[in-house]
Length: 103
Image (cartoon, rainbow, N blue to C red):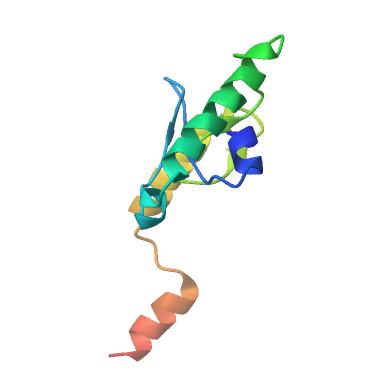
């Protein structure tokens, strides 16, 4: 994905299995755009395949974000923290004070 990003494409990486996600918009329907994406994807794949460790990447991707994680072992911990935050029902002190004053 780095090569495509460097060429101006904004794609989301997927892992296990490796892949990419693209949201198609009206811009992609313009003449030559998809052909250019396919051509540049092929070029990037060829560049990656020339590497000694083509399948070995030091970073992990998290779907739904544009961030890379430097250590793949952090992905599980980050997912747990995210889910925990989503289900946390504890009000912050400022929210609790605002709710108390609203009555």
